[in-house]
Image (tube, rainbow, N blue to C red; front, top):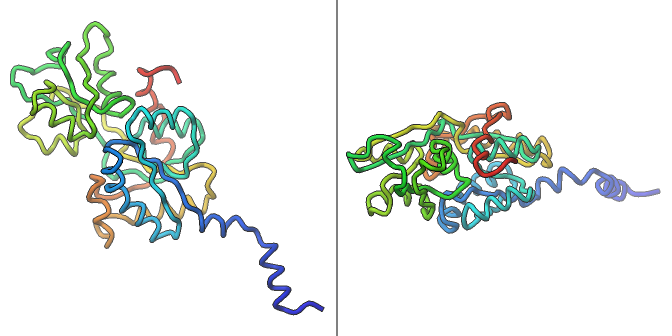
Length: 266
């Protein structure tokens, strides 16, 4: 007759291993390159550490060096456990069925076309002139390209910026006559005037792979929803330019991948 200890060991051996594996998993999070890689890791590592602390799941950041390499990852359909993306990329991932939105920045995002020269008062004044932006398919670049759909009446989009701050600073260094920037940055420059403003879109979104267990996805979502101004971990949000997160649903992103249409038909 087997001892109780032997029977207990046999039960553990036969028990489903998935929950234990899930809890021990090292989740990979792809982060959109709105900063250079080293800065991106510094900005987003506190969020990864917070999720690890709250859920027991280790989160490793993947920071592509630019939007070209980020887009190659998206195009290839490479599988990640988590991702931090803007609304148009989230919409594409949801439509593909590869990712599900968990939570998004509490604030909607708008993009502003900004200029310093008082003689530049209309969008048409920028035709043939340099306008600074992060490269395609950043949301700002895609919005800008939809404002200038006529190939004979377009500005010269300068995509050498490494961050949205870098794009705005190019106006002051006279490398560009205008720049596109998200609202949280545009508000810091009252000396720049607005030529155009985009529609409000869902803010940055944290998505989870559809391959993850539903309980794991919900655990991460709850941790994000509890990260707000009243949380002791509020400093985590400082570099993310948001006051907190709110629940995100797939319906919030329906049709927003239209902002990618200027690249090619997906």
